[in-house]
Length: 231
Image 1 (cartoon, helix red, strand yellow):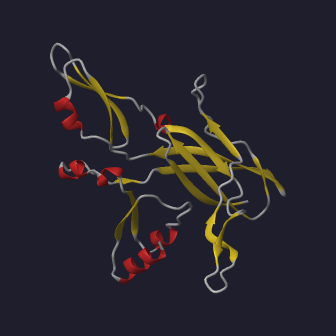
Image 2 (tube, rainbow, N blue to C red):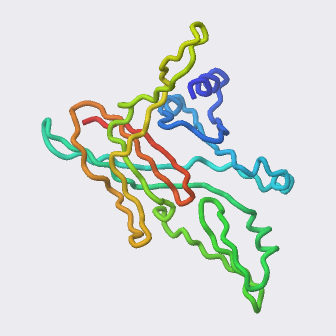
């Protein structure tokens, strides 16, 4: 990310789209924002490996899911607690070409598609062949399977064992990333489809806290946001 920002600054570029299959947790865009650079992360869809999809122009790069949260701090002096409220979650998935689906749909048939971050049911009337569309994701919480919070993110480094090229011996090395530890979560069950949008409170020491919030959507994809909270 630093290299992208540096090159944009050098070449006076104000907007950059970054393509990737996946992104690491806690990417910081504050420096880019301060420099007036709009960095957009785009996900490379699996359809890029489908020759037919490429030829038909069905490959669409969609934005990375977006999480919005609000920290809640209560207490006085050294006896403070913090909780996290999940206030918004947006996805931008696209799957299938709706125009093509409508053309191929048989009378009386229906199909579920994803378009611009919405799950849509497309149906063709058996008698009139009139196409009807029903949006199944009525609100942003419909996209969430479960979400969790790590109140002490960056407390546990991701360590791997590698072979030293000079000595041939194994050694431990920090990858530069941190391990997300699930300290609180809210998830749906078959019997209870409700979702808590505010976490439990956690004791907080005076100073700065790095808190990570992870959301798993209904397709099993996870999105993580890291925030810094001043206690």
